[in-house]
Structures are given as C-alpha cells and as structure tokens.
Image 1 (cartoon, rainbow, N blue to C red):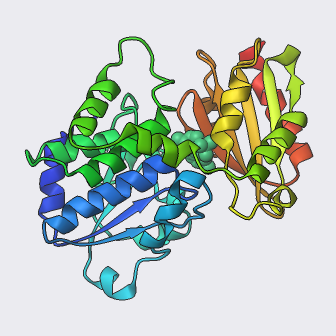
Image 2 (cartoon, helix red, strand yellow):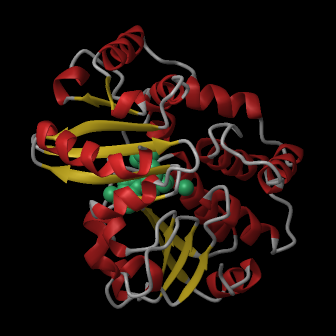
Image 3 (cartoon, rainbow, N blue to C red):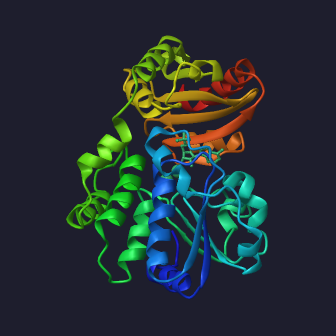
Length: 329
Ligand code: AMP
Ligand code: MN
Ligand code: MN
C-alpha cells in the first residue's frame, strides 16, 4: 500500500536533530504507545523529542501516560523547524487543536487507517508516508521501524508496543485467517521482555464498581433497528458524574454488544461537551463502517470507525440509522 520502507523512515527520523511526535485527538492505547515508543527510541539516540496530543486522555488504559504529553508545540521548538511525525492518523485535522502548528513543517506520516480517495488530505498529506491499512496497529509499524535499526528493543519499549498492538486487535480477537503478522510481532515483543499479563491488566483491570454500573445503564438503553441488525446506545456527560475514576469501559460494551446474535453494526455515541458527540461504529464483516463514518466527515477502519457530531442525539440517530440501512438490509 506504500512504497516507503520502515528503514527509509528510520533513516529520515535519524537524520533530524529535533522532532515533534503527534497523534490523533481522543487518543487510544495504540496512538499513545506508538508516540511514546518512538519518542523513547529517538531520545536514546540523542535526539531532541517532544510528544504532543490534544487529548482528552479519557480512556482508562492511557490515563497513566497523560502527563508525558504536551497540548501544544512550544514556540522555541517550532523555531527550530523540527521534523514532525504524525502517528495513527494521516491528516492534520485528526490532531485537533494541534493541526495549525503542523503548517510549514516537514512531516512523516505513519498510519494504518484506510486513506480516503486521492485528493483528500488523509490520502496525500506528508512528505514521507508509511501508510498500510493491512497493518494491525500503528505500534506494529513503529515496531518494524525500530527493528530495522538492528538494535534490540528494551523490555519497556517492547511492552509499550505490545499495549498498542493489543488495543487495536482487541487482544488478538479481530484478526482474520492468514494474518500471522500480529502474532509474530507479539512473539518478538514478549521475547524482548513485554508481559501480556501486565498489558491485559493495564487495559481491562482496575475498574470501579461505578464503571460496571454505567456499563449496565448503557446496555439498558441500547435500541435495536433494522430488525435487530443495528444496535445504538449513548453516554451523556451526566452519566459520568458518579465516576471518580473517569470515563472508560467502551471495549467491554463493544464486546458485549458486538456478540449479540443477529446484529452486525453497533453505534455508540459519547457526549464530549454539551451538544458535541464522538460517535464510534463497530461492525462485523462485510459491513464497512469506515465508509459510513466518511459520510459524516470521519473515518477509520472497515470494522471500527468514528466521527464527531454537533447537534442532538435524536437528529444523529435518525440520520445515522437511515445511512446504515442500505448496507445492512
Ligand atoms: P473509536 O471508536 O474512537 O475507537 O475509533 C475507531 C476508529 O475510527 C479509530 O481507528 C479512529 O482512529 C477512527 N476514528 C474515530 N473518530 C474519527 C474521526 N472523527 N475521524 C476519522 N477517524 C476517526
Ligand atoms: Mn487510534
Ligand atoms: Mn491504531
């Protein structure tokens, strides 16, 4: 899908003295892990490196890392004309409030999302691109880049990369037949000292009782459309008030609803601020929710995609359920 090799990317990164590493807003385990692993590797080679994210760091498995990210690139860093690296997304827009700061910087894009059609920003942006929609995670591409140096990965770096790989593959549950790459990559990470047990605990462990009750409420309010093939549920800001440990638990919700007999699309709407929502879509093959998300200005993968919505949940539900009909009936 790309004609740039991991080694060419490594050479470009190593040729720079100063680098800024950015990921998408509302980061997930893959985004955070890829950014931090690449930053650590480059710092250990004497580079000046900063990691940046518009946040918010809501997802449970990444909150421990939030303090290592800065929300904006500092003016003196920008004056050095750093090489920018865009991870787990392909267009400046996906970096949220950081987008304007990328203007005029030479940029390397490392991503595994399906690019939009030629001519759209996520298909064309960047001076050097390693974009492979067949890659299981951005962390997997970072692993190939670091491995191309020939240096062994330390256990900390390996565990970060395993966090990214496990987040995006649902702990290896979403991998189709014949795809051995994620397992081979995981084996190399475990050999380098990463602990699958620790990564699993980091992603799924430590939830409060209030979280589990919220999961119950989200299940209770799930509606079914198109003969039960489409499931729709939402979380409001008010739902999060009883939680002292922040919003989380989406993966468990997906796991429970994706496995409902007879359903092949799940839409989960989260209120981010009054009147503004993040919409997550999940589907069973062959339903392509990335195509639906693109109709709403978003994107993602065929089976996991998303977009943001401004308006009411009611209007969104009507429009989205309508758009989901032709594919699923
Ligand atoms: P999420 O449901 O937030 O876990 O996202 C599922 C997938 O869709 C991820 O690969 C995201 O990068 C992608 N995605 C989510 N929201 C958007 C958006 N607004 N624009 C483009 N891609 C998105
Ligand atoms: Mn991501
Ligand atoms: Mn990813």
